Image (tube, rainbow, N blue to C red; front, side, top):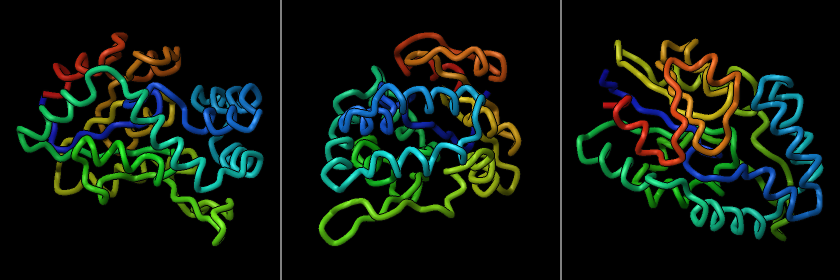
Amino acid sequence: MSFDIICFDFDSTLSKIEGIDELAARVGLGEAMAKLTDAAMNGELPLEAVYGQRLSMIKPDQDSINWLADLYIAEQVAGVNEVFARLSSIGKQVHIISGGLLPAILPLARQLGVPDERVHAVDIYFHDDGSYRDYQQASPLARNGGKAEVCSQLCVDGATMVMVGDGKTDMEAKQAGAYTIGFGGVVDRAIVRELADVYVHEADLRAVLNHLL
């Protein structure tokens, strides 16, 4: 099967970390935050119930976001560069759709050749001194069903679409008519194995290529 539009989640799909959990660990809130994140990704809690709560607890500043951007790059999943280079070489339209924080995601996305306008994530705002002010509360990606909304906006004129990701929120892309590939190379989630059209266990992202092309 070949697709016109190929979409990837980011955390635990293109990079081996969950950014919000790393930010939490940096300020001593790691264990509590990891439980909230896991509950949201497994569909046990609605994303909107934890999104603002996590950020108000962590209050990530500009320096923290820059640190996270570097960590995303250092911890990228095996095969990511090769997959994106291959998709670019054949002219595929590739998007990143993530509930993560936009300025932390953009540096790796740019390294992978994804234009900024094809990176869909939640923006974050700072005071003049770089301290945390707020996040983009109106973003659909900060709530359940948001990835389906973004996919619906992208999938026009009968285009075929696929979504690759590790969480239940990624599988919501089905609501927009997308084919779904569960990526279990970083985190293996039973709910994703159950919902995905196809599931990949390998820790190398190149394992999804046969399903994309």
